Length: 112
Length: 121
Image 1 (cartoon, rainbow over the protein chains, first blue to last red):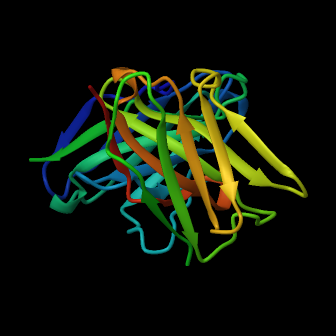
Image 2: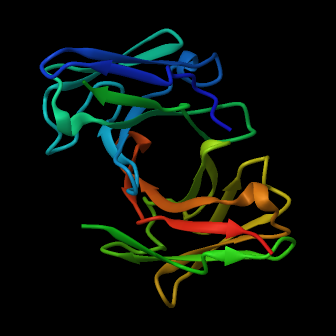
């Protein structure tokens, strides 16, 4: 099951800024492990959006940005566009020995 | 460019074995720097990492504790692919199954297309 907690949904009008939080614990984000973010469109596999807390893979628009502090991380989308409507997931490594990688509960972004 | 292509049945009966294969192109299953993972996604459990296989002079496996007694992930060097076997399935194992491989900073940048597997009689 998902170990990282995200809000179920966020929404915003085109052009606005939205943020998605990702809260972990001392065995994952709080232990200093990197946080990665994925975008998932309906019926498709997750796509890497942010890696290493704040880095964008080639081809990802710079309106997407990530940050991390303590046991939490955040994804920000500035200048929201209709095509950004999707599900977003955070992910990190976990040292609890029960699982290597943990994912967030997922956030649905709706463009109003 | 690395690509992963999944294959396998979409319907499995309760108590039977779920078997999926992930064919690799653009890399080698025996690569000393890659790892080959299985992840599943369901409405009730979200995204869940299941396990991985990787080669570092010899083969290693890591499995999630939640499925450790039922799961096997095997490499097939002759076909450059890896497989997932999940035994004694129940309807709780109904999910979309993905193969995936991490790249820079251990982020999953390569994913298979996903296989919807339903456990039902």
